[in-house]
Image (cartoon, rainbow, N blue to C red):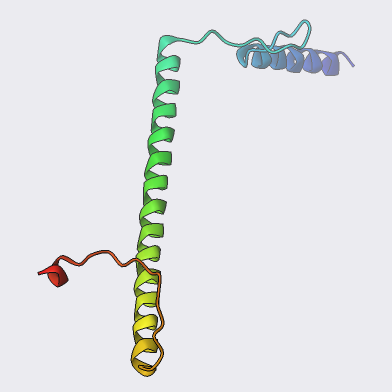
Length: 107
């Protein structure tokens, strides 16, 4: 019995030290916030900046993808309208597709 009691006391002391090391107040069970060092603050600021930069980069990539898809769809619609006009020359189909000016065609 004495051996078991000593073993339990030792485990309890070890657990108390462990919890105190993690910032817990072992008397009432609350968690104390460890004091923040200047290095911790700088690391947090850098992490926020990195996350913001990744977010901006992802937004820019997505915007480029969408612009490319829009250009492809615009070209497809323009080609479809040209094909319809050529296939049915009697029908004067007006399209409201705004095609960007091509510098080569302007000359």
